[in-house]
Image (cartoon, rainbow, N blue to C red):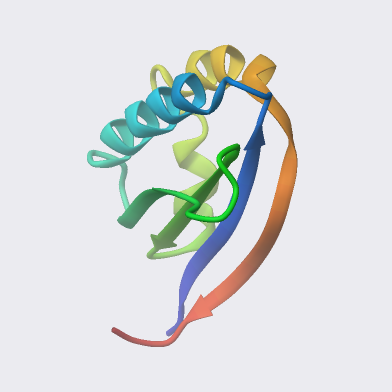
Length: 98
């Protein structure tokens, strides 16, 4: 069975990339204990100083959806939202191996 993956980017408000990055790294720490989370990778772009890439691999889409309700996650989303200028590229993936 294929695992569920997401690969997408967030565009930070000008000058707020590092603040947004700190929130996304906190999200990665929270996901370490999330059921079904196999990878939550946070990266910065070498091309655009305002862009953060998130790569996620989950056992299932249901596990991903449940992670959004974990203790501390809704609050973290609320604190990060004002730092986001927009959503960049996004892909939903069927992870086949690796």
